[in-house]
Amino acid sequence: AQTVTQSQPEMSVQEAETVTLSCTYDTSESDYYLFWYKQPPSRQMILVIRQEAYKQQNATENRFSVNFQKAAKSFSLKISDSQLGDAAMYFCAYRSAKEYGNKLVFGAGTILRVKS
Amino acid sequence: DTGVSQDPRHKITKRGQNVTFRCDPISEHNRLYWYRQTLGQGPEFLTYFQNEAQLEKSRLLSDRFSAERPKGSFSTLEIQRTEQGDSAMYLCASSRGGGIYEQYFGPGTRLTVT
Image (cartoon, rainbow over all chains, first blue to last red; front, side):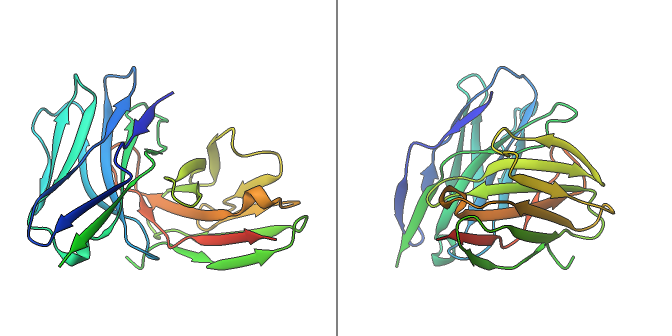
């Protein structure tokens, strides 16, 4: 079974600074997808960024980028120019590429606090 | 897209009672998922539908839990004989497909069993 580990329960960043959230995963599969989801307080979860395991190039979405290290099974999220609206719980998630591998396997999450 | 909606948003029930939650996915999405999230944890997968067919169930889904998606549109999740350990946020998500397709999440139903 696949597992996802987020070793940082909580992180803080100053507004306009850069922060990196860590994620490691365990799988015996070679083809899969990785995601970062954001869950603001009392609001629904939204997708931040996604990565296909077969792609060597790291995904980027505006201020959000990932560092995907397949051999190390590491998938960290970098948030540049942090804004107050980035404050939320961030979840790393894994999804198998198998035909019926549809479920997301989530880590425990990292609370990100943004200081003004 | 009008988004995924869930009803009710909050439910307080007494131990032993039955509860039912509803999820309305984004209209063109054929895949629907249920997850459970306890405080301070990531969501855990419960079950998944493709159209009206329930294709996968987690071992977390005991025989007190049942889910349906009768016409491949909305879905219901019923918990019978609720226990205090069932207290959690129940999240519904939908997507166009598997793989890299995004799962869109609803706001969740918070269940409190007293």
